[in-house]
Image 1 (cartoon, rainbow, N blue to C red):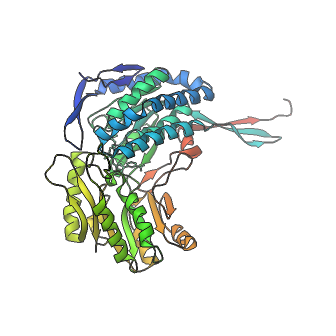
Image 2: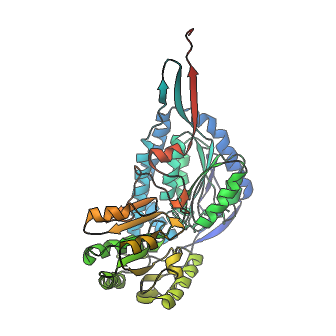
Length: 471
Ligand code: NAD
């Protein structure tokens, strides 16, 4: 019997059926996890709808205090959750520990935001105020790469604004989120947070449900399109954080020994399964051989294995489907370019691929043009800044990008030409709750974090009062 439970209407309940959850490092089943049914999903939406008026009517300070209680409760179980996260997701324990710390930090920081009434005109003829009101029931659909952190991108903003929420974890990484549900049951009124798992079969039900007013979705661009179309029938508000194919550009004045370790970290965190990871590296021809050699040395030195073991830097791919997909990229990469480090780990168990560096590859190869979402980095030679910018921008994606140079002014000029939601200089993957985050082009719609992100969980209502001489 599983001790993991769904959270519906404040009660921790069994799923109508169960499903196995597998540790990607061992391929062993680690839990018989509750699997929600369509009826349970509907129950969760009804519970969130019923809880909404009471939650929305609370003063914002009380909602803030509740989110902070949740952060405190998480802090007390952070170590236990980090180990579970590594077991279900695969990332090294140090990365899971960091994910827990970031989750708590996002809860705490986003809870400090406010929703003041803004007066835009206060004249003789009228007084016009902007109010930000909650929307109602919010659906949060989560991917498998940062199962808990991405919950913390969405939950505090939704709740602070006065909405109630249904969280649907990804089917291969539901366990830490269900444990988080235990904390929600302890710290929040019934129905404010509901958590229902699925086997990849209830997302559409949620995103088309007539009682859901907003969908905040993080996942692939392909699924994002489906969410967008199923939200259309009832004109739901949507925020989409989708796929990326981030380009990093190394200028001819960058020092290979300085930048290579940072580029490596930016590409291979969480075995490359990061929306904002460096996925294409464009290097000036004068630095090309040196950067390739530095990256290959780092790749050879990285310890690959079960994330619970000490010193492991690269864990397994999170699930079998992703592993097979990345193996396909690997095979083609050997034809389209030259692999100078890495490759598949054979002999199992576990879905491991060593950090792989591919040189002498160019645009047109699938590894360059598509999102690999795994530990394989293509390194492309460019002849100058215009060449690099043109190639970097020639993508349907536009999540992040970065420029690397020893001359910050030169790098800044290049940064201003890149089409992405976030452009970094001499860093990559640097983000936080006070910095709005969103994708350009097909990498997303809308933003998360900060005041801009909070606004997306609200309905802007204008109160326009005529001032007559009589009153
Ligand atoms: P996915 O799109 O396959 O799944 C994401 C979630 O959507 C899962 O919970 C899934 O069950 C659910 N889902 C599936 N079909 C649905 C439907 N028809 N309607 C509603 N929901 C549905 O993505 P994934 O493979 O879990 O995650 C990897 C992808 O996510 C990559 O492309 C990555 O770049 C992207 N991602 C983006 C960000 C970002 O912030 N931009 C962050 C993390 C991951």
